[in-house]
Amino acid sequence: MVAGKGSQPDGAERRLQELGIKLPTPSTPFGTYAETVQTGNLLFFSGMLPVVDHKPKYIGRLGKELDVEAGRDAAYIAALNVLASAKEHLGSLDRVTRVVRLGVFIATSGDFFNQPRVADAVSDLFRDVFGIEKTSVRLVIGVASLPLGMPIELDVIFEVAD
Image 1: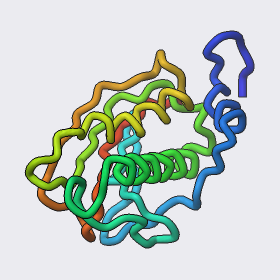
Image 2: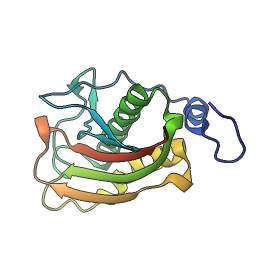
Image 3: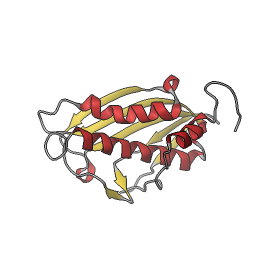
C-alpha cells in the first residue's frame, strides 16, 4: 500500500476500521455463476443479496411485509456483501478507484414510493468507505419480486487499480 495525503489509496481499509465495520464472509453463489468478474480495470458483481451465512436475512416486499427501515437494513447487508466479495477478489478495498455504477432493485408492493431512501443506505455506506469523490451514478428500480423472495438486489461495478 502506498500512503499519501487526502484521498490516499489505503483510505478504504482505514475507513472500514474507523467506522467499526467488520465485513462478513463473502457470499457464495446460489446457482451456476461467479460472484465477481474482472475485465480490465472494471470489477462486476453478480446481483448481491441481503444474505447472512448463505441464508436470506429478509423475505418479502417493501410496503407489504417490510417497512423502509427493514429495506434499508437489507440494502446495507447486501452492500456489505459487495465489499466482502470485492476484498476477497482484490485482496484489499484500497484498490477500488471508483464506484462506477450502483443499481438497486427493490421488491415492492404497488404503492411503495420510497425507493430512494432505501437505496441511500448503500450509497451512504459506499461514500463513507470510499469517499465522496468516488460516488457512483445510481439507478433505483421497484420490481414485483427478486430471487428467493428477498427484498433487495444490488448491481455494482467498481473501477480498480492494477
